[in-house]
Length: 191
Image 1 (tube, rainbow, N blue to C red):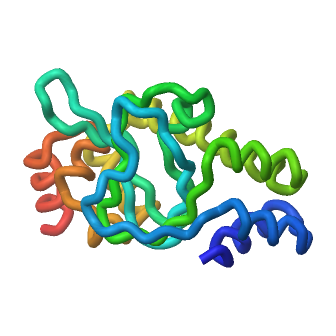
Image 2 (spheres, rainbow, N blue to C red):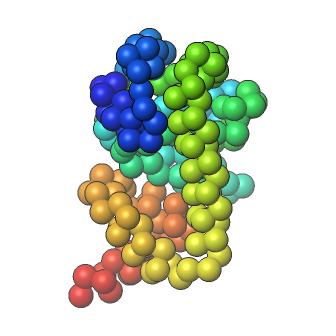
């Protein structure tokens, strides 16, 4: 499992054998079944997850008790409630495995140790968090400026596998619409 992560990192920064050994030491491989909440809202996130295989999401409940999906992670990639993981505070979101997931996970303390011991991991971590900030800014802009159909088209262009693995109600919520609206859009696009 570590090879997936190491391949991605080595595309961005050169890795030594020492870096590779540290990765294997600090990133713990885990397997979770589908529909499992692995980090609960109201608690401090314990791990940063690297998704080797499977689909995950971040979600919370709104004032009406409805689930609101704020992020869907398609492999490979990292997922956690970032701001609450970095500044250990109680998250307002749940982290859930939508499908069965093969993950590598690391605690905040071990991530700090890893980035202290390895310049490569420090550089890579900075890049990951910069990407996360850019992604969130772009997502906010898209929600404000693109139509529902444009948001859906862009999602399936960038992540075509999402349709086959993630329930429609999660995709609709992530895109800021009701499932019925997404069904109408999909029907129009398929006709």
